[in-house]
Image (cartoon, rainbow, N blue to C red; front, side, top):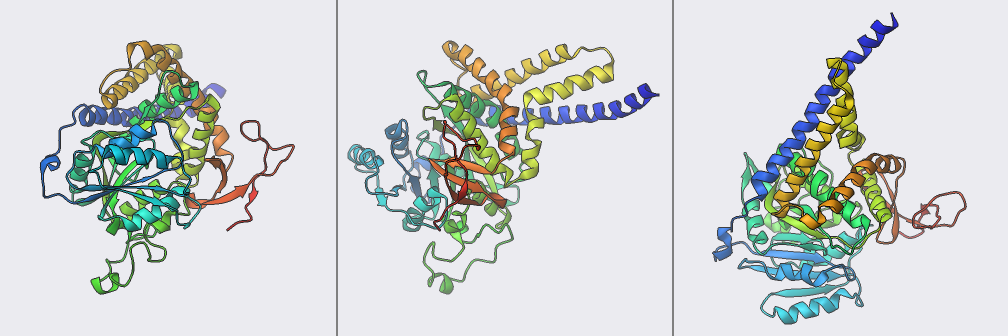
Length: 455
């Protein structure tokens, strides 16, 4: 009787596991196929040599000296596009990035560069605060917002504008973004190598798959292009936006001054990039597109624990934005997927050992990930780095579930030395540190999160 009951319970579960296993592999192969089709060829855009092109304002918010900063920012000056300007912004007059900007202005005197010093406090997100003034002062409607640690190929701007001017089915494109591709160096730490293995394989594969299926917005903000006129119509409510203001009304309200609308509406969120993508999708009914370029993300030197806490931070942010998807994440990871797939195969076949299924599973998973890397990079993992990359990939896969467990049971994050408490829908509030004996912290610091006394 016990055997019958056990079999009656396990067999439906095994079939459910097989369906889930096939589904995850299908999604993974969609991402792999997209990487091969979209990124192995990057043709020049006809806009590079056309005089009839829309102008683009490139916004690069800066803070301090990031790794490779001069080359990161120089990639913006080298864009092959006939009509653009660059707005660099820093929050404080003494910011070290200003010296790098001076060097760029000397090297590229013909490139229209503006430097904006001083932010505008509209929320807890320092990036949004830093973007407010260049957002208002930009000369053109099309904005291309790039993080300071990103390098773009010279043809990327033209190809992104091409994508923005297109349609996806019967929906106009409202936002163009680029898949992040980590760039690191041999002398950097284990954390860099693990982050590189994550971003250039697992993250890229799933990011491309989700954006190919395109049933929901999925955007990271390393590189995003959109129209300011679109952003001025949204307020992060995720409800359909009202019609555009009449010209007579519009002329009485300055850019960025409509209360609760535009860039300022996203200052209360930590992941403003994801929320902007959702607002364009849900409030305006527009869609997103990926161009065939990658956002080369130059990684700062990080230890393994830096990597861990970075992943914890963004899982906690996602948990408060898309709880169901975050709870499902472990069931998409290679080890968990392999275990329930191998168990289901053994149960349903009655003879295939789990170790054999797992061997085939991990071999195929690694092969797909390496091919995704090759598609995005334009070349395979260099021969002299293959063993280090494989080690980092294994560490990433082994640590994914423990990191998720740590992240899911907390709402406190640390970003650029500041502490925040995550709230519903991705909103955040600043917190202060307070010494305590029985609460764990990071980097040997013990703290208890308490609400900040500030606004």
